[in-house]
Amino acid sequence: MKNKAILAVSIALAFFAALTLGSARLQAQDAQSATTPGNNNVDPAAQAAAAQMVPAQAFLDAAIDARKMQPGQQIKATLSDTVHLKNGTELPKGTALVGTIANDSAQRGSRATLALRFTQAEVKGGQAIPIEATIVGVAPPFDESASDYSRVEPAPAWDGTAIQVDDEDVLSGLDMHSKIDGNNSAVFVSTRKDDVKLPERTQLSLAIGAEGAGETNAGSL
Image (cartoon, rainbow, N blue to C red; front, side):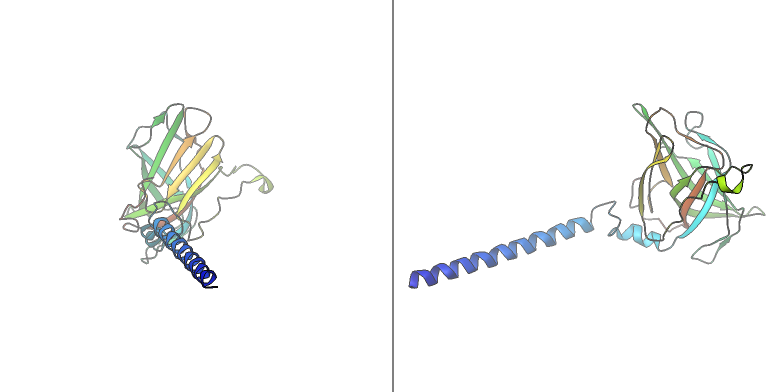
């Protein structure tokens, strides 16, 4: 009887130890997840930047061809609607978003990449406003000459919470990667040819804020 009692106590202690160890492992995994870059749910720096941004829709003023453009070359997009930034600044419909081809556009084997970085809004009258902008969605251009039923829908608006986008086939033959608080507005990667092309009036869905919304540069995109 005594031996049975000792055995029962030993089993109970072993079970308790296993539970404690399992709990410790789960806590360690949670802590690791909280510090993993790119985790949409727990990246504090990106979440803080996102809290200072608002949704916006725009379209490219001119086509972009990675093969024909050099890093540092200027690009422009136009706001489709008026946007009110969190700091109270109004960007009227038609405001120009000014950016550049980023230096980390590159050729990776047969997969070309194109990084875009929008850094400034130019309102009518010439005033330049520094901005942070992340491209969170892309849609083909509107066909202005087509009938209403054949018009392409705009890219879905940013929901205010998503901080990283890894979207396949956003346009034919192109994947897109972007992150709030990243180094670039977006990086496009060719999937089946050695060039990256964005047509004129390509529609862009953006998260946009005043300069400083992403000053910590938590992401590397």
